[in-house]
Length: 605
Image (cartoon, rainbow, N blue to C red):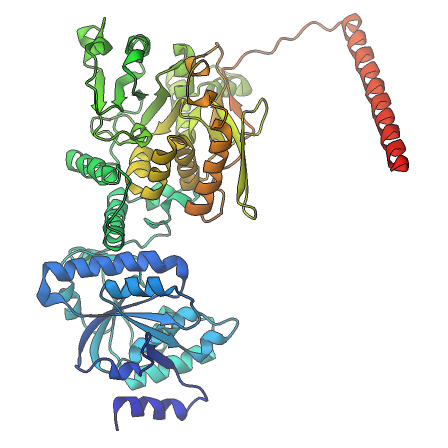
């Protein structure tokens, strides 16, 4: 009796419907697909959202096989019949070296069944002595053949299992799932098979990388939780993004986007220069990132730099020179002292892209960055207040009615800043709205709350966000920014809020700011506002799966000022109350007339 006959007999003795497994587009039995008893790597797609992460895992596995040909094994992808996958996606899976197998299980048709549990069909691959089952949470690094040396029953955090296909195990799993439809695959394994031995991630770190937390490299920008830093793995996430980009180039090698290599060039160079992309030791000062392109603005930019360097809070001023075709004019450094000269760094770019304003900087050591346009002037008092957000500390002093020591005051300042570090904090608030049904968006200037965006014209951010935007976000978003020459700040705001679920913070300056872009700039174009509304709609629809990451805020921060309180005099109050009564009666009269006109019009119609 063949292995296939044994399986059929075992199932017929216990249930009415057997498991169904078919090779993609061939219709034959799985057991006839493979002729030699050997080992294999296998995974499963039971959620279309996991299609691309699964492809990245497969691409990483093939890359390892290419480095060491002797490690190459069969690769299997189980695809439940109930999951509708485009034929071109199946072709991509096969191009990645996978044998795609359509599979089904009676329990999956139940309304409360889990289609992912059809993975038990791996135990019916009797032509294999051992199978390494992995989830998309894993990317492979080196020597994956060493995983086959682990004994059957080894497991890694519910993301990798060493399995042994055999009829008895297969039958036990099928029975268990029929009794408990809500059980997960790992739960069923532990209940029905010999106890699994969990492997430490440290033991396999040379072979693979595991993204075990709820934040993944493909969804970090939509994590939406204040504990995001506990899940944050910038280097690991970038490794995944690089694999993803390489895989896409395999499928689509041709592109007319001139800046396509930019992300990898910038991020590889940055990671080569820094030992830890999360290390920013200076917390009591901030750095400045100014973007400029036009040599005609150098004279005024020099004045802004001199202005900024007068603040003891400013650690370094970085000038992002966006124009790769022109050298930086020497006049940028005019009238700077030797000390101030060392505090100014020019970042020359190889690509002309608005996205460059958010590039990570290897010389950056402050945990806070002030990003500004080259046509904005902010008084230092307001700029320093925005950094310290010290009004809340003053509020605490008044609320508790006692004088604080300098140490206590400094501690409160620090605590308030830490509480806002995840926020984009700045001076130019905007309002948006998004409709997930029509996929349309609204974007506008506001004179009152709420607001949901703070523009990059003048804003503070945490330094980690630079690497996140440039190195981890979907390159397609960067491409859209380049093609429209707009909206990089909107994408950045969505990412910052999407990571932490912390709204932007508007700081109202005490003194007037100077915005020279109101005379001549991209924002004076008549199509500017509609284009930005379209950007918002496109970004949320394409990169946030129609789930708006932006959060509305009704609060503002401004320096504390003691309220003006007069000694009470009724002669001053009575006219105010009388005026309020007259205005109320006048409003009622107007509403009555308006209602009468509406009634008359209705009768005439």
